[in-house]
Amino acid sequence: MHLGNFASLTLFLPEMAVTATILLLILVHVAGKNRQSAAPALLSLAGVGAALLLVALQPASPGRSLFEGMVALDGFAIFFKALTALATIVVIFMSMESRELAGRSQTEYYIFLLSVLLGMFLLAASTDIVMLYLSLELVSIPSYLLAGYLKGKESSTEAAMKYVVYGATASGVMIYGFSFLYGLTGTTHMAEIGRVLAAGKAPLPVYLAAVMVTVGFGFKIAAVPFHMWSPDVYEGAPTPITAFLSVGPKAAGFAVLVRFFYTVFASPDAVAGMWKLHPSIDWTLLFGVLSAVTMSVGNLIAINQKNVKRLLAYSSIAHAGYMLMGFVLLTPVGLKAILFYLVVYLFMNLGAFYVVILVANGTGGEDIANYSGLGIRSPFAAVSLAVFLFALTGIPPFSGFIGKVYLFAEVINRGVYWLAVIAALNSVVSLYYYARIVKVMFLEDPQETTELPVQAFPRAVISLLAIPTLLLGIYWEPVARVAANSVRLLAF
Amino acid sequence: MGLDKLLVISAALFCCGLYAILTRRNAVAVLMGVELILNAANINFVAFSFYVSRVIGGQIFAVFVIVLAAAEAAVALAIFLRMYATTGTVEVDAADHLKG
Image (cartoon, rainbow over all chains, first blue to last red; front, side):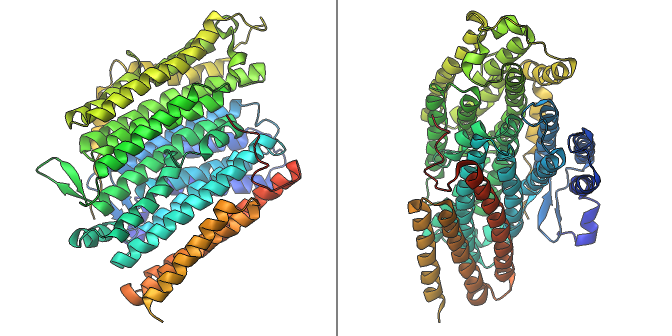
């Protein structure tokens, strides 16, 4: 049953909290004289914190359909809302610490950041392709501006330009695909589209539309061959935004990919315990190849990188490839593996970027050479970066290992051995470039011997990111249970 | 005019847009290619809405696409202007400082 507009409002509180914060920030921007004060950051923190709290209080079951079928409120949406809000909070902490952003207008920055958050909330929950398109653009357009936020810095402007050109093209192709889905079914509601498509045969136009839509989603999660923008954007954008883009919009992209394919192209098959996609296309092969190519390209190009931000950009492409493994088989267990991996990935990736910001603040650079002797200059930063990098590699006892175990297990259980072999080889390759940074930090002599002290506040935030990274490698059961419970998608 | 003719027109427009994106080196021209693609989708939406669904869902979608295209163009042009101010050009080829 679809809830009407007024009845929906009480179940729409987190989104309203974010919107209210954005409006308040605009007022602060208009009224405030001091553009560098910390007030906007604290206000955004309060707003996002309130939103996170309201998300946690939302009832996950039964799943509800809000605003006449525009937005869903189910376990899946709540999971992704909590995940993206948490990522945003960490990114606000990073932004307060970043020296790149100091001296620039703060309010506008947080207005854009929170607009992206609102877009991600809606994207993970959209059940109508109009809503999906609107929220996708609400994520994209402020992201372009954030990537180019370092006004006057050539690389930042270039990053924004490449982002907007690739992004506009991808969303254009996607919307053309949507127009065919609408033409084939005569409705914009995703579940209705799925019902009409399931009744008919799977003709060529459906396949064409599916491929075009995949372009749009593939761009958001930076899957090869739609990844071309991401290394340049990640390198040129301010580092907190790089961290944000590699976790937040990527997670939202996975959410919308899963929800769209599950409601539009699939129907549940109770006997096999998995979802059946429309026949006539070998979906397992299609997504399996996409996953294998994405992780291989990401890892192989990362080997040669000298800039740590760019290296982490390629590594995040590779991680999108690993996560796509959970999507290949369209089983609830595979989905659970994706959700669990996203949680783990949030902590380890944001943690790595946080240390990159601290090192850039101290040494003025992001090249691997800047990390030489970091183990002597700042043992805390070096050890925590090593923890995050080994977790990203997927070595036990770090949490990345457990995440990968879940992803591998489902692929192997269902007999797609070739993909598991490729993923295992990729993990070995990734060890090489992650370990290279660790080697530079601990075994090479520092260029300068001055100490790089880490203040109490960044130390606390890094610890808050490092503790889950370690803890989830030993005791992951509660998070795995939450992930398993969140694989409940609204089916109407 | 039948549905098939409209679909041919929109497909032609889509191809022109894609061609412009792939061959043009000027960022503003690339943006014009994107607009062509979006308008191809709009023609599809309105045509399908009239011939297939008989409700106005598709036309509403087209209005949203037009609005978002305007928002996207505003942001893109602002970024290109900033690019022109820092580098003196809006050629896509000139943006080659980030690579590796």
